[in-house]
Image (cartoon, rainbow, N blue to C red; front, side):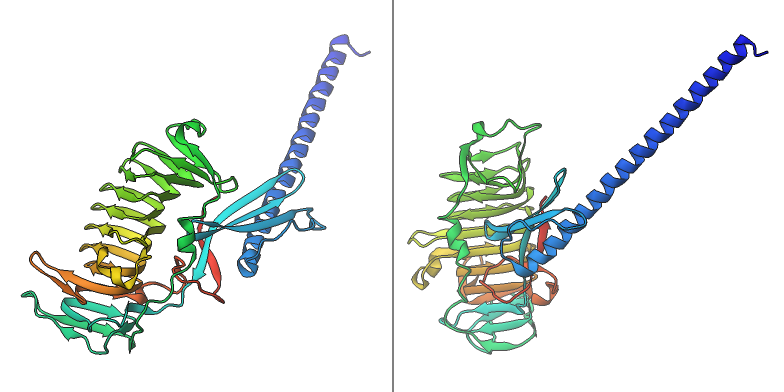
Length: 403
């Protein structure tokens, strides 16, 4: 005879077993769902990466592809300009999920030029320690010695030397377009979504926001798809964070100690105070086609990875358009100057200029260089330069992933 309490125990045990079995089935189903989810995420990721590689080869915008038979993933991409750079936007999606990626892309450089100095003035001379590593195109194959200071003169050249032409290679026409064609959503800062912790962010999959600012930019963080513009000047304080944004104003100044990555475009003046660091890919550019003066001034201890460009003036206006780069500065990239260039730092890349000059406290000497190093070989073959020239039949590569 079964006692009542034994039957009750059996019911409890059966209930407990059913709960445990139900829990096991639930967790097994949950594990399977998570496994399917992560497998899909992995497939979306690999699909997106494959589409990026395909886009770098084809370069043209691709409409939405038919979904793959096994995974049902649809893919699409487009390219569009962002400043002087190109932006690659890639999407891989299913009915339930989407993976997006955005990349700044450019061209692999094959340029081995160290110094290109146009041939419509006297031959170049040097004083102090000068290193030119790479191919050089100069007004004359002979570099004269100038006895200006009491320093020992030492010239080190490695590469081919040739006589230059009487004009610089033509600059990429997209530089000029930046100053005229900007298809953006123009707005005031007060109309931009209220930031959290002073952070303004705009995805590269959104329309570019063009924000008008007052002269002084301080205690703000701008990241992503922004053009910051002023009708007069922009003074960027060191406590400002700028990442992958574009600056446009007649005058732009970066306070000593600033760090960021920007494309800065001006018509009159750009100045980098001491110890400014502009990370890759950054551009410092002036376009001046007027009779007024323009100037790029880069002070001591600055580091720039990208390009420094001054263009637009005629040959008659060379002396009114000046680029000055002080000692202990480092540029990893290229210089293009249709005016005159005073260079005291190091360039790991190429220099193209109409004229160089050297100045002391009491005098200035045209087509003279002193205590500089221009080394095209320190720019590795995998480095993707800012597209100063409109190159064709050159492979594309990713400069930076921005999303």
